[in-house]
Length: 288
Image (tube, rainbow, N blue to C red):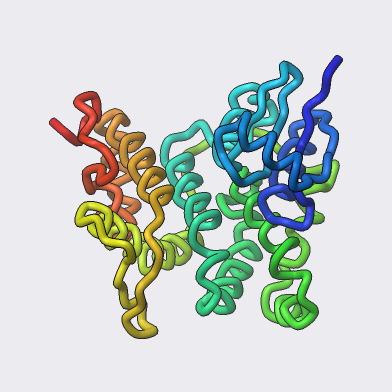
């Protein structure tokens, strides 16, 4: 029987994350190093220029880490890496977007952020508590490929945030418990991380949304380090739209719980803005 094939570079965070998630799911996959000529053929089949790429046993080629991980979760739901409880699931998506689209590209505040992440993980175990979720693998992929490979960074984190240094090994442990959480609660220490996400990334999302509406080429924003012109991210707007729609489609009592969690930490406003990339979908509850 044909196996999955990963095309990419295991030294990069996206390929490493993909390989790690397939491993914990128990999905057999071959790793094939991506070459220039191979990349061209894969990009043509996947409709996307950048990898990693995943070839399915049926011969389909998928690209975009986020889309691939969603596909894997649908096809291989056990063990589940995405919470089924709505509050925890929304928090997971908030954190994933931040880890994928913001934190690796905004290093000037990363030291303090990493230390706070380390303190949170030291208290809670993993990002959403005692049970690891997909966001933990995304975080570990970034740490192992772009942070801990630097000797000075590793020494600093071993001293100030040792839980981050051991995260990757802990996630690969055979005895790791992946049983479903009983309740829909989040660790109290996660609130500080959500506040940080709101202060930087969600502030950027609101400005990015406005810049796209006005057809600007950059996002002028001051995040405490002076006014800067950051690049527009259409993918960030697309993910913001998707998350906002998911929240809007929740039953009213559940949506109220999500609002009561996110609004006080400042991570609510950006998610309520209408889409800037396309016309409002008439099926989107935010248009009512």
